[in-house]
Image (cartoon, rainbow, N blue to C red; front, side, top):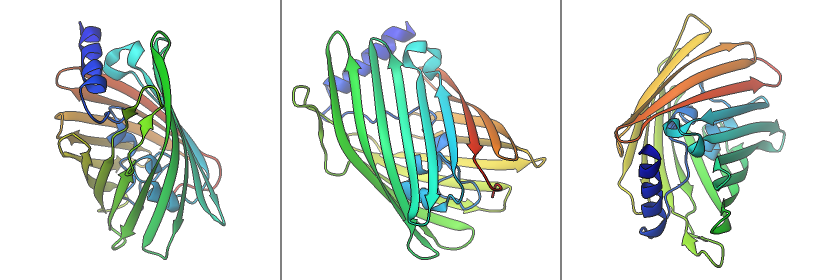
Length: 274
């Protein structure tokens, strides 16, 4: 029954709406919530706002897997890698979701740099595609960009835009990709506590507000939780960090579709954690 419900929802979203909903993992607010912070940035932070890449001072790589709504056919996988250099900071994002009869993927290349001590900017170019063997396949190229202002050592804010000039999936499919505009703020109360909020407006969808908090305890452990207002979905997770290795387990809950568990592993390649 759950599989049938998901197929109906997908059909409605891809056929009746003028703009296609973005293919984000259910727990994206969890993996990207460190974007508006100086204390909690990691290789996944730039996936929420490309300007956060400028805050990363050591190379690192992260992988994330999510069993969306506990179904193998809707599983989602993501990889993010960051590479600082004297010319700026570079990032790579790889996403894959679905199964053999329907899958979608995204390859993103990001670049960010600091424009002074308080302003960071970033941009990312994406190659997105989906494939339905019995029906069709289509691809599109788009971009997203962001900026982050560090108002003080503790208070940060910024904006991000995704696909602002439109774009369609292939010449035959002609499906329009949605545009998205986001504003976010974060507060580093201490090295152990962070609170953030994002206000997101996606084309042809209601405004979505995402609030989250993170707390570190006992030195090596941390917990994070939050809520998204559009679907009243909640997400939470806990993790462990030692030296250059970090491991998170997470879960989100959708009121109609149920749980989506996930796991994230991050490895910093050299240097010390911030």
